[in-house]
Image (cartoon, rainbow, N blue to C red; front, side, top):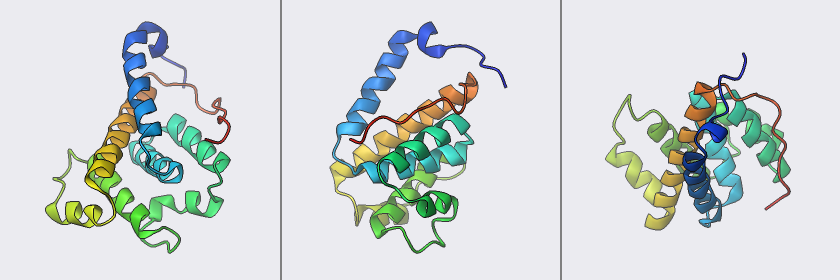
Length: 153
């Protein structure tokens, strides 16, 4: 597939706002490993090849194991995710697929056992950001495979 347009050059102000949200998420205090897992999982659900490539590379650069990345689409059956990560992944799936169903009180209570109110808002903002990035990359066919990870945070 060929790139449709370079959205960053067409709408630099909008990209600046998205990057500002992403910067907030990156600095909000949530674990980098957790953020990379939820970004990857949302990108898998959305079928965003560019973001899957980016976030698996970033996760590996941050020390994430191949096993946990490969098993991410079947996280419920895999024993190597923490309870906090499981709660975040369940929240990720619910919010990414929100058009298909409500976010249940049961899920909210489950997630709140592992995240403070502020952490849950920050996790939700992380999901808003990645779902937005996914939609930009998919819509405008960002070139897949060119991303190089940044040094460890």
